[in-house]
Image (cartoon, rainbow, N blue to C red; front, side, top):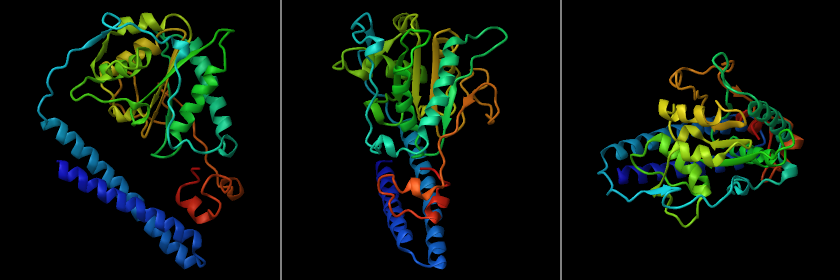
Length: 322
């Protein structure tokens, strides 16, 4: 499996390098025929890289399934063994290397964040009952489509928008490699979510892989103040999440007033424990959604970093996704 993974990584890198070369060639192309040919190569390469990434994910899952069990580690219980030391209002968002676009060059994001913020504030004021379920907010788009950028901007916006005069606490976790979360083989999805939250609320020198915390202890520490959990790429934890993980998200962040959850994903997902395996449609009342920006305005897009020579064909190829 190690050789397979290495081979897949190498092949993915080759395709990514080819895509860069094709994009450069497309920008330099002068005839419609030449551009058409290069666009065809780009489409093939994009499809190929998606297939390779699926192969790599399958290989990782297969390797994990036959891997010998890791030696048992002594769990660190929070708050029994180590206390909570970071207050909710002290939580900060992670920085990520892709976020290198100046604020004034981001395309169409302000309106999206404002729309998301209104949904969040409405969700915080809402409460699940026997006749009504509070739907989470899902932000869905393909890889490298701006989901993480939107989520960290939403984090900042929530920090600066009080609810009925009260400050809203917000915490962001990620399952896509940002934020330095370290997965543990064989860990339940429920514990992975709790551990990803709790590790940000204790001394950073504590071994995050050993952290254990009950739902009740985390619930008590979050308290009654308005609180929003942002989850980046929940689908990387699993798609769909299992019923226990869905139940945790419902119980802690949707059934209670003054709590809410927002997640991003490559695919539409449902975190209703009774419907995690159901196909989620765009009009599903159990999930709120917003659309990330799309633009075909060349003048605007050319102001983005490394996009000064972008042309209409490239914009069309990527569906106007900035």
